[in-house]
Image (cartoon, rainbow, N blue to C red):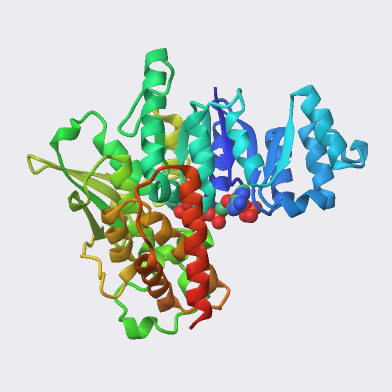
Amino acid sequence: MKRIVVLGSTGSIGTQTLDVARRHADKLEVVALAAGTRAEELLAQAREFGVHHLGVGDGRLAGEPVADELAAQARGGARPADAPSSLAEAVARRSAAGEGSLGFGAQAVADLVRLPEADIVVNALVGAAGLRASYETLRAGKVLALANKESLVVGGDLIMPLAAQVDAQRRAAGTAPAAGPAGALMPIDSEHGAIYQCLLGEDAREVARLWVTASGGPFRGRTRGELAHITPAQALAHPTWNMGAKISIDSSTLMNKGLEVIEAHHLFAMPYDRISVVVQPQSAIHSMVEYSDGSVKAHLGTTDMRIPIQFALSYPERWDAPVAPLDFTKLGSLEFAAPDTDTFRCLALARAAGERGGTLPCAMNAANEVAVAAFLAEEGTYLGIAACVEAVMDAHDVQPVESLEQLEAVDAWARTKAREWIAGR
Ligand SMILES: NC(=O)c1ccc[n+]([C@@H]2O[C@H](COP(=O)([O-])OP(=O)(O)OC[C@H]3O[C@@H](n4cnc5c(N)ncnc54)[C@H](OP(=O)(O)O)[C@@H]3O)[C@@H](O)[C@H]2O)c1
């Protein structure tokens, strides 16, 4: 039995992770859950899976009635009517018993990763807010199943050495899961899960190139002029994947692919000039690895995130598929094209940030998060996303990465700059 913590359990990846756990209840036990704002959904999940360690990112919810119900669940599922009237009393009682916990705020969410009963932490938080949880997971010696790509984009220089340390400790102790290409860090992103599988059993020195596939998003083939008046609703309608709002916008601008290039660089220790992006509109090929003898290994499968999520949790085993397999007789043709980086500038900007390295990817990522949020709130334009990212990158004084605190300071600086840029339009 593998015991998992799911951070971001109410989101797209989080709910699909719980679906995998539901289907494989004999192999996966959920021991902790955390969400941002959807406390009622978190409570329902906790009741269904019998989870007593809970975290809520939004501290304002501590004063809401749902907090008493969450506290009752944390104490062992007592009925809400039996709950103590104050949250403080509930927290004190469950802490004394050591059997359950409930916390509010970013640190409370990150604290869940240190639970002694947890083996694997699924980090399905969105944005740079996930970095601290990834860092704390590896510091606690746990396996990190990572959906939160921003952790590696922002903090890859800190995260990868920690992952290598945990991997070495686990190998020395003979602890499962067996080591793979990224050690104690199992990627959930479908492209990186695909590359991971293509690398299994191979000699890393014989890898010539990683091919990261892209669907091209909903605006593939459009000109810059046609993108000027794109609305959030249009950008949220992804052709092949059903995802959270932020990654859906990132997919449409190709920023998501840029973040994935940086993620691949860190995960597989691959120089940027040996990571290529190719548009594959059917999304049937999830990525490929080219070897020095000209052979190319591709990973194909149904476009359903439960497959890479499950692989990250089952490895080194394979469990029954959560979805119908790909039917090649119905697939028809597979198309390939180079990405249009003149129109979709975010891909080129992210790649440039990765190549420059240091704190630039952190500043780039924070500017993107602010610009995407502004676009979704109809306070910024679609083309303004790339322009804002570029302006913040130009203004940033790049430093080598030194610490989590330094990255958090750069992140805050870049967010302020991006908000100023948007306000000045
Ligand atoms: N969706 C996909 O298919 C997909 C594929 C590959 C990679 N990814 C990556 O996976 C990550 C998650 O994506 P998603 O699409 O699942 O996002 P999502 O649907 O927006 O879900 C995000 C989750 O994080 C929680 N959350 C947000 N801020 C939080 C905070 N401060 N503290 C605690 N919880 C917080 C949300 O809680 P509330 O909703 O309760 O506020 C929600 O549970 C992203 O990094 C994305 O790039 C996603």
